[in-house]
Length: 348
Image (cartoon, rainbow, N blue to C red; front, top):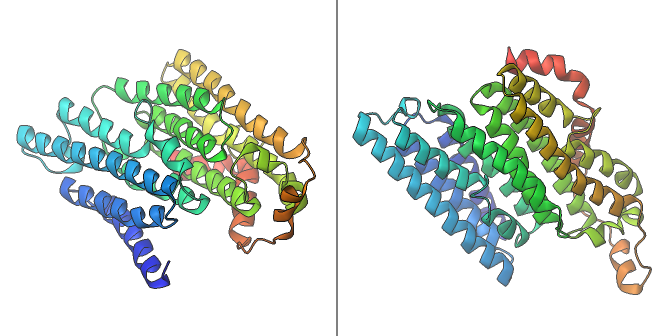
């Protein structure tokens, strides 16, 4: 892609998210989301592959549906209450419609079915943008909406953690596994959103760090399926040693960074006298942990068949910058001791 066009599209991505993050009016927020969607479409379709074009079309239709529902809900709220302000979303009908529209945009279950299919059709770089940056604007709007009854957010959260865990069990494609992982993590965030917005924001930040490092590892190894992970020993032995820790951090095992948000969320749910929901959510984390362990096993304890087509990619050094990967890997593995600091910054 022409560098000037690429720079314009990336600037538009940043602009769309910034407009939504800074807006207090529903029309401005909607406009930011639309700029965001339109800016990423050329990036998704730049491969000119039928799968990429199909994924772009699916993404466009789902995002357009979500944006139209959001606009309709905000107009309904203005009609019923006379308010266009985001923080004044008081009518239950409009609030529920907005939550469902934003759930569709970020891929919360049961409105998640587009996400694995779209992510599977993209390259890993665009997939990384879709799984991280594109979540920021809708999540910022979700943070500002306070429904009178938290039941809808709790139900969306539990459904997402369950579906995210179950959906990834039978997958062999890494991008689909990461899509279900995204749904499960968003479920944890939405579950705690009503009770502690700052904790949901902390969970989002740790999710962005862990997912970015995972995508960059797969990009460095040029891996798109579980079988291709087995060749990573020969390409980058040191990175292959660290990758299981990154995956287990995504699964939420101590003493890694991913344990921190899960631990704090379960603690907060117990404080809110929702111990059964906390128990169910903790059990759904085991489902996700299974497929992270499966990836770890494929990467570290299996050998690739030694044939000519298997050895060819090993001789091609990657041109990817390693500093972002190194920084994110350290953050993914070693931030748990900073939990008291994080609690001071985000929760108190």
